[in-house]
Length: 506
Ligand SMILES: Nc1nc2c(ncn2[C@@H]2O[C@H](COP(=O)(O)O[C@H]3[C@@H](O)[C@H](n4cnc5c(=O)[nH]c(N)nc54)O[C@@H]3COP(=O)(O)O)[C@@H](O)[C@H]2O)c(=O)[nH]1
Image (tube, rainbow, N blue to C red; front, side, top):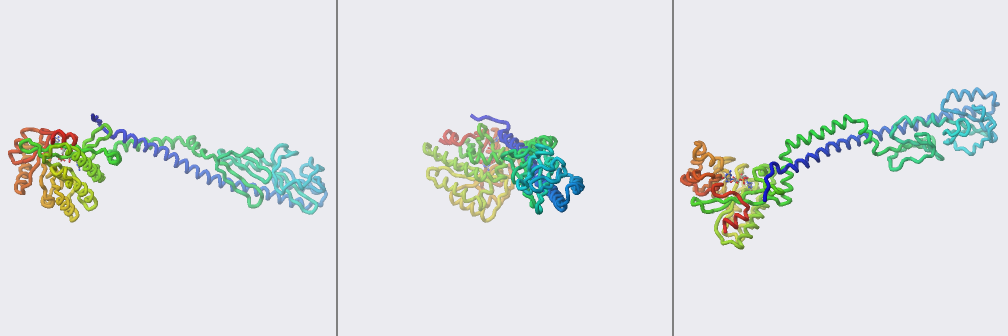
């Protein structure tokens, strides 16, 4: 049972549209997110550079201050007090400066430190620590300089120093790592950085510390969703409009891809329409392609023009000829052999050097099979495309003729009709197109055209087949004027080849 569907490719079109929508919308989002991500990486690398330079400069300042204090280390504490004050005033990031000798603080910018025990050997030249005295529990960075018996240790206020990394980016987790401990963007010491995130590092060339950034992979994407609603709306509209336009103009693209699938699935099947002589007796048949597309049976008018344009018609015809051969052989085994001709539509390009070998091979299989000797194979060449009479085409025609293949010209007078074709093809029949038969004999224009073709055929001794005969009046007039063969709904409608062979030929 076959089902008639208004647009058999509707599902395929919808699938194409959905795919196009997804490609545009999600593809657009991904491209934008990727760009945002790449820009974020570049920005983060810049931030790391700034952070390293900033911390470097503060440590530099601190060492300069240490040297300044060491240069007056031999002065008594009271006399050197203005120097300590000068350091604190001029280098704002320094919290305290302490002069140490004999394992105790002998002088300090902070009076409470003076006299406190201090072992300089406990500290690295640059070290991150937790403050014990001035701001207990807060991170401090110390710098240590030594000259002779004197050591100067400066402390830098951690929150001031490291708040620079807090200013960069909210979605990025930063840490500053020193040899013994590290501090993160929230000023927590020695916390664990997030796992599975991209991390970038920048180490100082002057001091032993590294600034690291941990970037959330989905961060930029979430950022887009949150802060680019207009862009998303634009992408969404574009992704809707383009598939909609595609839907309206997609006929050919969808048809081509459906034809490709049809070829893979061998969905093209042979139908046959009987051709009768003047007594109404069967003399042959024309094989007409049908497309069994799921439950829909599609007529050639829908797909042949695109198949010809895309050249899928070449493998489609070969596939059809394969099926014709198999069905003929199948029915011949049980048939009373009755002579008749079987015509197959081909396009002129199938006679070109590129395609003719396979056509010849396929015809040879048919004509050389003794079981099918009662069937004359006719190739109907449509005039929808130009028939070139170059050497390759003429060679192909001659090879086919040697195999016993006959030729007829389809739609005579409608396409690229040229009298040379009659000579080159050694045409065995001319088919008068249905469009002329429709108006015959009433329409003067049709009448004159058909009469001319009939006249020409008589002079050249080429039989005529009139196609599209629908009324008895048309048939009578055509026969009276010399038409030898008739094809049309008046006699038979196209039907599956196998049922034609078993019911009409046997
Ligand atoms: N290259 C190939 N072209 C092919 C092949 N199979 C078919 N075709 C071409 O497609 C066109 C449409 O064919 P189809 O829909 O099969 O129509 C054929 C007949 O059904 C129709 N016809 C015959 N008699 C009547 C009639 O009395 N009334 C009426 N309304 N239609 C009728 O005519 C078509 C036969 O046309 P033609 O081939 O020109 O003799 C058509 O152009 C086919 O050629 C293929 O395998 N390859």
